[in-house]
Image (cartoon, rainbow, N blue to C red; front, side, top):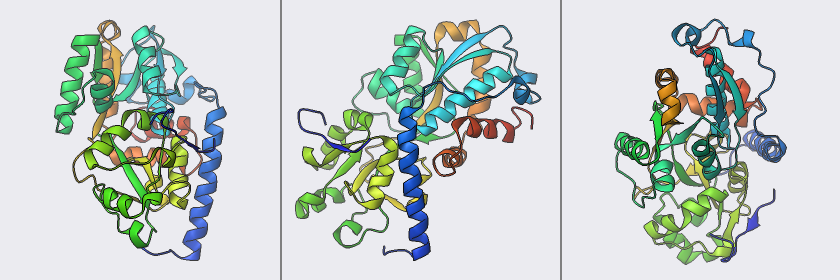
Length: 344
């Protein structure tokens, strides 16, 4: 799990109080343990949730999926696993039988599983659909416009329906430590990176997960006319991005998600995207057209759940796992109970 340098052939405020520093150190250590543990767990583990735990809420009253069977997928990072578990338990509460394939490694793998029928549904982000699966270089300006454009074209070209959507959108960003001083502390916007790199070339170091480095690093460098030297780009697990940039080693800048609770807990400063490179990507449940044709109730189910998935709610759910050490199953069940989808 140690960060490793990428080569060109491999792809692309002041200090706080002592109490605050100790608290941040505890969070750093906990995140490092969680990152390592997350790599060893088997995809699809769903704990010991019984049917009795899923009774008594609005889903059982409003939707009847008895006799249906679905396999639910997700990507590997925290937010995706929570969304996958929410859908898994929502379907079971509505009477369906489910298979659990949450925690698959990356967008390409889980999308391929959806297209092949190995999974029947998973939550995806509209910008990812637009650029990665539909092959567009330029995003559509406007959150709702981007979602509608992605949904229309994916249905027409690939027979994939986008249901919901949720009321939150995840978004890539780049962050530094909020405690940084000197020249690093003066980097407030992404457009500041070029001048910082010109003056401090050895300090222009970046941590990113594999998918971000494959999809975004060339484009972000082009937009902001900055070059991260290849030996100073480190590929690691997403969870370690937050740990590494908070301590400033091996990187001063890192890929982050805007819905991640660790931004606040680790006092990270998100750089302003002053040229609008990153777009807000609404989350939606993606299913094959034939599955939706057979079970049209899925559209209503996704809409009901999506209406309760706000940005604040998702940040809190992510915090339960990444900061409090709970499981994705715990977070999903908490969400469903809080909103009356299942009984207390």
